Image 1 (spheres, rainbow, N blue to C red):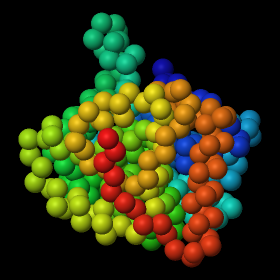
Image 2: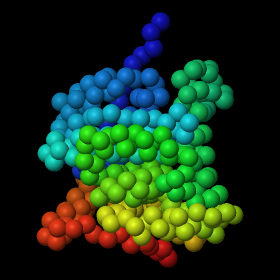
Image 3: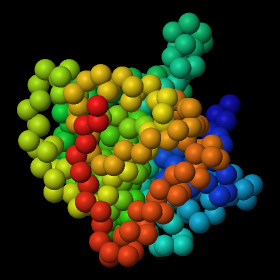
Image 4: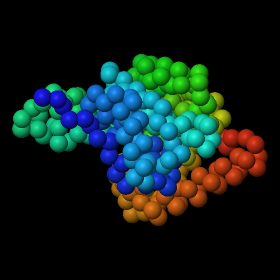
Length: 290
């Protein structure tokens, strides 16, 4: 009996959705597709079908993706056909609650085992933020770094994006690969200083931030639970924080609401306008908001 082919779901992505939030959101589904054994050409075909139904921007062409089997980190690459440049999407904590419940209390399956395994890898990475600082040289990123460097051989990577844990990864990988634009949503911090028992990589992380000459924007929903919790600690992050007054929490669904999309587009156009006028990237700054 053949296994049913995984179907990529676009959620509330539309044909005119903003690029970075679109790629950040669809990366979760691409990770699910990879973990379900869906071939790259099948992923491409499904994305094109979504475009035909006006459920995905037509100017974004799926290139490839990679899910690190050791860490569960997924990187998805899309070519913007208007600019000829690539946007990378990093996947955040991909929690398969249903799979965990079924494996524990219901009828177990091989796919359920895979889903639970990937969730535990993500949760482990979340905990790792509190245990010690993670830099671009951490073994956690080795295979992903190789994937990004291979893409850079053939394409100009202009943007890297991500949500939650994926936002943290996007900042570290974007800075270390000198990607000009880093746009993240409700991101995890780079490190939590007062929780970490070992912050030996503090200077390494500081150098990475200071060396970076691009622009980091952190969009944070005003009811984001992660941001509220992090503010109770001394933490390390980078870039410009823009609070979205959308009354939404941590999930990406609030980011893709029409009124929120309008705010994001307006803010990103300001950045682009400044850079076009001055012909240089905005310098990132290190922030520790109260």
